[in-house]
Image 1 (cartoon, rainbow, N blue to C red):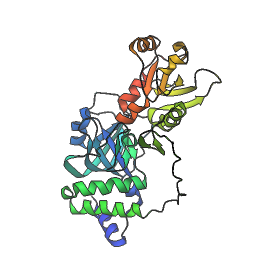
Image 2 (image 1 turned 45 degrees about the vertical axis):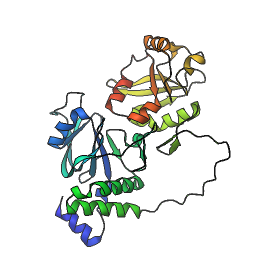
Image 3 (image 1 turned 120 degrees about the vertical axis):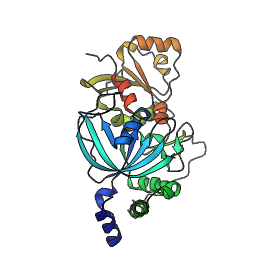
Image 4 (image 1 turned 60 degrees about the horizontal axis):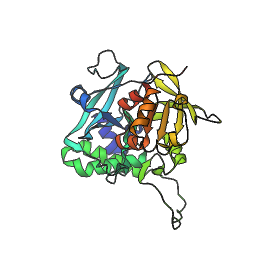
Length: 318
């Protein structure tokens, strides 16, 4: 950590604006050892990561033993010509400096089918992706919880930096929200998911469409058109060949696809909340190259490189 940073904090009582940009970095278990040893990370996108020198990064290990294990500071980014990972083709390699390390992960303790954490007031889906930037209120909650649990493992200057970050973010004014009306008797909502402004899980097809619209960027899918008839949407999905056309049908549960009389030959992907399709119907979809994207499973497991690979690995229509 630079002496200049400490001087700025203690003289001006503030934090350089660049350092207030804090990101989550998610590393798969199979790559953790190599990344941690060399303090490096890799991305597979055409453009750079968007990280700038001095940005702070909370480094998480995904998988069964998930959680934040390191605090790094971003230093540089170069073309990925010599990376140690063999699980995929990487385009950019980022290098970091370690500021803090923990003996055991700071677990967010996601629970329930919605995978919501009361500890940091975030859903698991909010942390999905290779690199995730936290909003000011999210950052304050996350760092406050991290400090409470891991302060004894931080050097004094790192502890003070974290505390100043929390204080600075808590001072950022937020828009005044109108008082919420109490729900009418009989109102029914889904389980809390708290994903990008969507508080509850969908209960119908319209809710699936709204939730999917918030996930599209993470999934590498862009909107192209909405046909008047079947299917519901034409999109483009990022593949190694470029953005390829994909025909999408929305359903609340996947079995509704056949219940509504749809022809698998006219569809590439079913987007639903829950996949309840039976084996014989699943085999029919597979023969026609139709994939099922169950958003409840994405909420639970997050969007990682494997999910994107699975989505883009299909026979593109002409």
